[in-house]
Length: 370
Ligand SMILES: NC(=O)c1ccc[n+]([C@@H]2O[C@H](COP(=O)([O-])OP(=O)(O)OC[C@H]3O[C@@H](n4cnc5c(N)ncnc54)[C@H](O)[C@@H]3O)[C@@H](O)[C@H]2O)c1
Image (cartoon, rainbow, N blue to C red; front, side):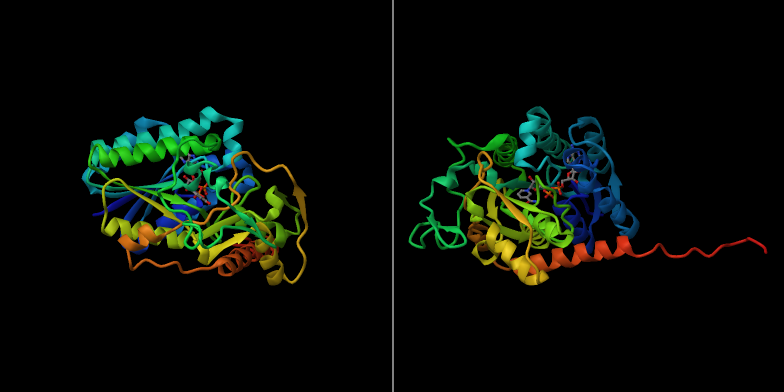
């Protein structure tokens, strides 16, 4: 039996990885304790996501525990030891802004929790492939020093620049910049994952993601850009654009495409790999462009306001250069562009709204005599 351990299995990336891996025949043990509801409030809870997986997926087992707590993690790995073929580590405090509210909690989850996962893997299943969901925030605000040019709806790099055509590659320094507290805790974890690869010879990979999204994203004000924007459009709430005239550019990758990338790495792993991964130029947009695309879809204008103060360390322009990964795994492809993703998120929200409004099905009264 081959087992995959997926942390953060109720979250966007974790739950997609669970569906993908069980679909490929692996047994998956998911770890999640719904910290997301503690970070961002009950509307961002991921509990329903993993309870749904438990109910509908026979290959899925859930463990509600905290990755900061090394003892239950170690016991779990000791129990399944060499049966564990893959670890996808996606549990995290994922927000730039939230981290500043409570740096110790952010660091203990993102850096300390990652160390616990690496240690348990090394002790009990050192042959397993270890995939870490890292982030482009490890580069801090260095991308903001690029010679960006203001265009009508976005900031952009001239195509003559070395990152202009294909986006930013892994050669960008991670040093000497402002990272945000979140960027630092993820950077510490990223370096540790690389080191368990290079120093201990483990098959580890850091996937430094741009924005990841999809219809299962529990978008919240502090995290989940496209998902939250579309949610505001569907529910007629006001969206706040934060800084850079709304022309800041993000690339967006569908969680399915990311899970598929994990699978390619799992099938042909390497030691201490590092990849930038995202939607690339193919699936990039500015906030203004995302608003326009959403308005085209819904057919009515979105309510939005503008706050000129940008977030500390926030990127003005990020497009991932996927070519290192594509060179190592030439059969991997991006399958969704921005409008495909907005449409999927939109339809999922509408469905949720429809279900919440439809009357509960009438129960037949049983065993009551007239
Ligand atoms: N979504 C993105 O745009 C994006 C972009 C770049 C990097 N990433 C990285 O990918 C990873 C996953 O992102 P996501 O969008 O799926 O996040 P998410 O918030 O949707 O999922 C994370 C899950 O981890 C769980 N969790 C948090 N702390 C935990 C703890 N201490 N113990 C157990 N479970 C815990 C949460 O409850 C949540 O369900 C994160 O490491 C994030 O930094 C995400």
